Amino acid sequence: MTEFGTTMKRQITAAPTLLVSVALTAIAHAQSFDGAFDFRWLSDPQDRHRIMRLLSDVSFTDSAGKVWTVPAGADIDGASIPRWLWTYAGSPFVGNYRRASVIHDYFCETSSSGGNDVHKMFKEAMIADGVSLAGAWSKYLAVLGYGNTAGKCGKRVAAIEEYRKGSLDQDFPLPDEALALFARIQAEVDARELVSERDSDRFREYANSVLAIAPVKAALTYRAAVEFRLMPSPETLKDVEVAIAEEQLGDDEIEQAMLLAVATVPEPLP
Image (cartoon, rainbow, N blue to C red; front, top):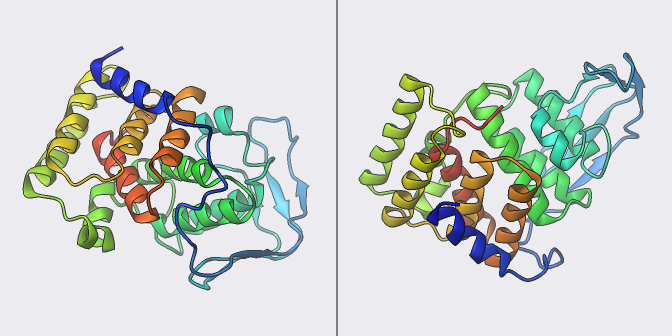
């Protein structure tokens, strides 16, 4: 294991048991689901291309009071959740993030809202439905990278551009040196079609450079998120969750780490 990976692993394995009951930050308004979330399968549930049709209107109200409504008759296939995440976190058709995945799937398909807004709604919906804070953040990382790089959800916006245009850049302004580094990483990925499996050591060196020049408060979460994007696995997914629980920072600091991890490793493994 590289020095980068060893350091990250040593730090997070020393973390205590996940303190999922400790809130990382208060959510401004109560979130809630409405509707029965009843479906009719249009294809065999065991089939690789499974599709289900919603039988009545359903909705989720987010922390800003926005109501995300999915109409009866909408077809849901789970395509907005990367399939490699299904292996590690469970299918979007089952489990305690099923309702959140339905809302996310529909709005990714319609592209009526910006991709990152849809992903943030997904995170809030998961938390409202009982997913741990750390677990919701780790899944948010997965859909954030998948949607932004593959153009699978809303308007395609690079993570670093989302960072720069939003409030995060006001709270955590990046030095010009860091912006130039991210531009170089993206250019190398675009020109050489680098993949994280082959060039993982180079991406880890870039991550070390980011930590040296950028104000990353959630450094441990950032390191874990980079490792997850380099080597998606149950272990690295859990490492992200443990790192989030260990640092116990606010939402903005964690989102900073997530966006910078996606900018550092622009193309996750398929």
